[in-house]
Image 1 (tube, rainbow, N blue to C red):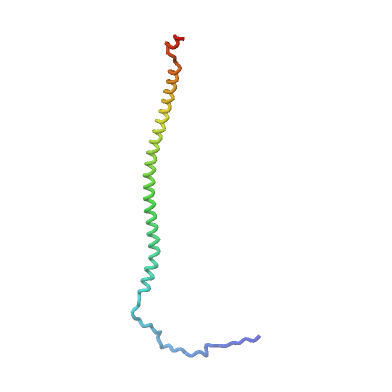
Image 2: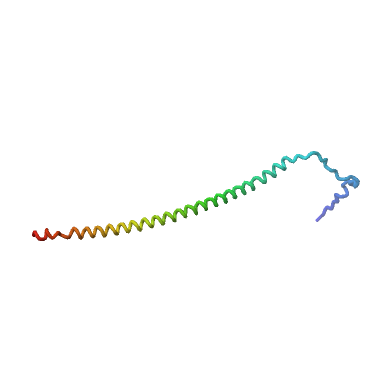
Amino acid sequence: MYSLDVNFLKDRGAKSQDSSPRRRSTGPVNWTPAIAGALIGALFPLLALGGLLWCQKSARELQAEKAQVDSELAALQAEIAELNRLDAETKAIEGDTAALVGVFDKIKPWSAICRM
């Protein structure tokens, strides 16, 4: 229908071209917050890295201890196998001895047979 065309550029005051942009005055800058922020920002990754290195060191120590315990276990299992073999041999000898005693118990002396 109707359109309203308004040009606000004409109403604006002319800007002087000779004025240079103002610079902020440079005074002493306090770097303490920036340094504190950088230190805090570096602290957490360093803590994580330290924790990772500590965990890796502990894992290596545990693996070495596990290897030592495994070698001791193998030696003890060999001793157990030797003891089991000796136990089986002892039981076999006891069985042979009991059988031999049984044979001698069944044998009657000739003098006892002759008196009958």
